[in-house]
Image (cartoon, rainbow, N blue to C red; front, side, top):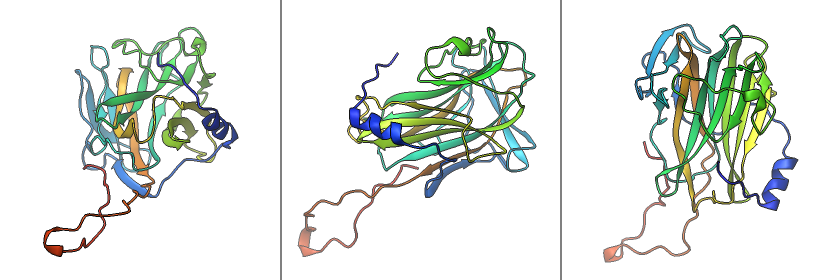
Length: 275
């Protein structure tokens, strides 16, 4: 389990932050609607990903199925890993939840950040399961996946951390990860919205800030969206995977070198996310 090192000023900012509606930053950098193809989603460890008719927004949606091994669901790099922090960013994913799932069935869904060194930094994982102890369909959040392969996350009602949200009505829910710079440290808001009301989250949990996750020294941009575990007959229906970013301005040095031969610099360079 990752150690939590909280900065007092960052914690104060989080405590003062009010509940908010679905987040949308200025620039959409990735979208998967599954209308014509899989939009970059790929199989992993024997898992499967496919398209089928009907959807959250359009005429089609994706279906994620699990393999027999641990960490067994499909993933997307959402246009490619980024080791550069360009500003706050968010990922929203519509996922269909069914209260009729059998006891023990469920999935884990993660969006991960990349470190400034280009390596994996940290996962931010939603666990959803028909809890074996409580007998209810529950949602919770953490930084770890069970990776059980043939077993969904269990005992969500008894895990350490935030109180689980009970899903009482079947339907589409929007799972949101919001990656923010809070006093120079990474904090990630993990929210769930019922599709009929995107103005108020039915579940919210903030992971961090973690003293090791300094921006931009240690923290880069996006890494992947990944169904880390899928244990559902027929798979998980998901749709409208959308990444938006704020694109903070990149500071320009006070002095710029002149080009050879006295040719001046014609334009300022901007850091852009890798395709």
